[in-house]
Length: 379
Image 1: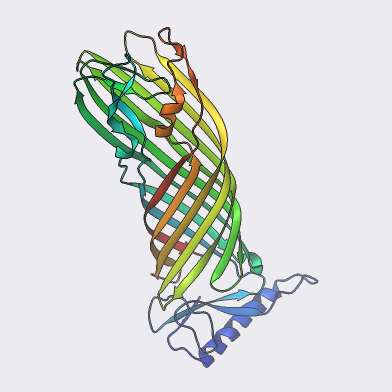
Image 2: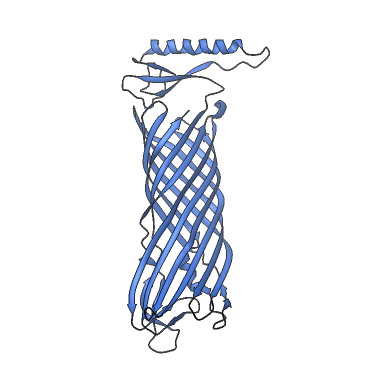
């Protein structure tokens, strides 16, 4: 790697001679008959563009431009990025989960007052991590590869409906509850994992298209837990409803440099894909002295995932950069835990207990947005 303090044609020509000299030394070790390499190139990796029109990038000094030598067959670049994520998950859509019992009409008939609705769960922001390995222009071909993984776990939200003097009803497919004074509360937990492997094609200095495989795991495995404390303090009934989504599919997208400066760039990214989604739903209610009641179901659906991001890149050294940005992602055609409550019937065999019946609701949508910050190392 070479640094020159003054831009100009002469400095760039000297660098060409240096690169050619290094190529000649390498040629001495080349076996007779081995294919010769293409002419050496001078690639500017930071600093302003020189007089010959070399591509501008960021540098460590406004007066210094950094270059490296590369031959036409081996100008590959690799970049390893490690980011911290601060993502917000949207609240579920409106779905009454617990109501008061009806004044008349039977023991397990829902009333008009909603004690807990799914839209009351506010997940807020949670931290996660992302690792991204990007290789471009492999062996000078213009093609590249990208492997990316991120995870955000432990989104959680709680709702305390307080004391219901007239009792409470959980709105399963076959509602169940009581008409005794009951303290009602609920919690909801979730996590998201994503892995993708993409083929990349650079079409201009600023635009790279990509296409590849992606797997996502939307895990409402902690799910919705509903506590009905009868008395309160006399008897506790607990209902847990879960939904687990495994999405596998094909995505397309593009990376673009939207603006270039001396040391600072702005990049944009977009991805969209269609996925096959395998969904598992299970529900379980335990309240002594009755036996446990449960149900489960599995199904498949077609899901969509879209993602957009905007990132600022500050070059700290010729190889290390600071990255910070904002991203949004949305999933449709997924099963969320709250939507499984009205399609689950763990009490199909009430009062004997055992396994009930259920189907899967795959009409859910989830929206994520938040900040990213991290470092990148290029070699």
